[in-house]
Length: 217
Image (cartoon, rainbow, N blue to C red; front, top):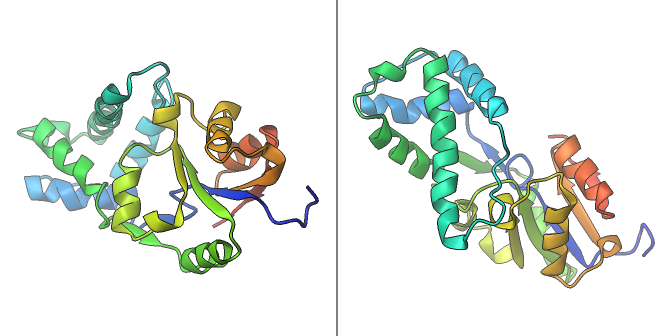
């Protein structure tokens, strides 16, 4: 396929590509903590979150995990980050029931409230749908992606959704790209992948043999 030929399928990352977060993670966490009588500095909480996220010993992918167990493992993965975040921020002990708080926090990020669709997203999706090109989501998100896409009105655009927790590996591992391609019976040179991460999206897709497009938001 030449560089100018239309692709058979275009895969897109989710957060940072199709939609973004309304505020910093720290600020959005506080939207929920205040319901439980806990307040903090948003910037400090944001720093603590990214330190916790980066310190996780493994990505959000669970090899050989039965499908029915995946949502529970996702929940535990994020709960570990949340606990560590609030411990780093020095406010963990202010929660009378952290488990109840986290249950509400987890549900919050499955709702449309924390997210916004980028202005160029819908025109892009409409254009390629009108060209008859299949679209797919390819993301290191968890199974809440289905609820988020539906809440944002994006679900009808996509013929497939491929996420790390269901495949068992995370981008930039070539296996997750191969899993997405197999859903479209498509070879790598017939597909594009667009995402905002240089390593996970651009380098990962390029290594998998796809046309890689780095979207620098």
